[in-house]
Image 1 (cartoon, helix red, strand yellow):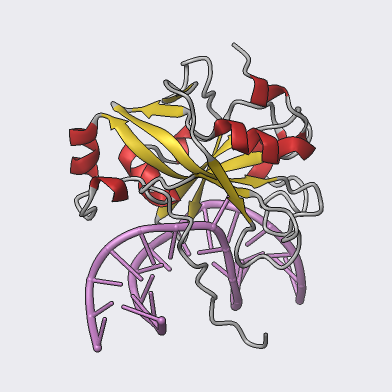
Image 2 (cartoon, protein in one colour; image 1 turned 45 degrees about the horizontal axis):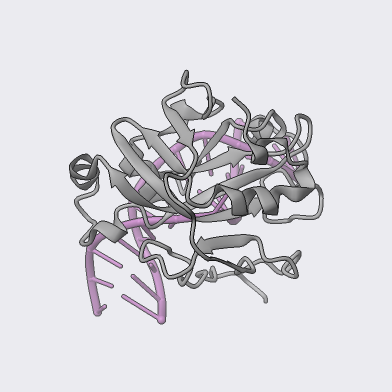
Length: 202
DNA sequence: TCGACGATTGCCT
DNA sequence: GGCAATCGTCGAG
């Protein structure tokens, strides 16, 4: 199985990100509809990308074939998931930032007792991974062939309007809006400000 | 081998 | 709105 976004070149990762909105990601009994994503190219022009400084042991998956999962741990306690895009040998990935739980709602609630509303169940990269019960073990597994813990499927219904905006907190490459979300969706976390970290000097 | 930090979240005031 | 928790990864020495 090959999807359109899998055949786009690495420099068109923003287009791939757009196309992935509305797709359904299923893992461990829970299905979420992707409502917010962010593109990362790291072709030497994206300082925010893990792949910006070349291949390392961690980001090697980003340089692999499209349709696989790139999972990494952040702040020592949460996981974030990326959908690898672009041709093999060139880094490109789409970060899954938020989703709407469309199946396995009870299971999702049990996994995230801190969520007060259903819209908060997967309204963030780390939250989404908790809901799907995915971790580092899912890194470098396929989202397409069903052999991995997670499976990605096309939208069940027509995807609505899409909005785009620049990634907050990134000074370079801010001229290109690489964050995409479904207009008006309550699960989208795009409204959140990027928390500036306490750093010496400006 | 060591030191610093991050594509975050949730609890505190 | 502010900040602590917590550790794998990376770059420098």
